[in-house]
Length: 169
Image 1 (cartoon, rainbow, N blue to C red):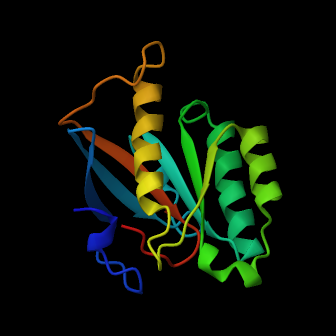
Image 2 (image 1 turned 120 degrees about the horizontal axis):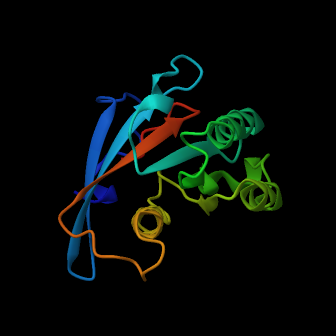
């Protein structure tokens, strides 16, 4: 399953878990996404994962602030302080309605030590780049001393924080 196999306009969440297989250079990796709403449930912070993926809408300052609140919580907690975080600004297809500047997101990424992407799930714009980036971040965090260690045929677990009602995978 790739990012193209999901309906980007779906409004319902099929479940709180989704799996995406990605093939990079002949190496197959399986990404397992756990969706959570940090506003309604705190159990997400205790789940064992390899990476946190936070989504916000570039046309919603509120969703960006909510995502940054989650980043702050992750960086303050001893158990998640060093976990990789990737933040993705969704809805770049709505550039005219942008309320979160690229500069703001970049500054927060530098301040809090996370990787930032901008995507459009609706247009499938840069979603595959995001998936490849997630694999790279996980490989680096698992084995930071070596160049992107081979995690072929291993399941990796990603905690997907939805700060807006989006279905990405």
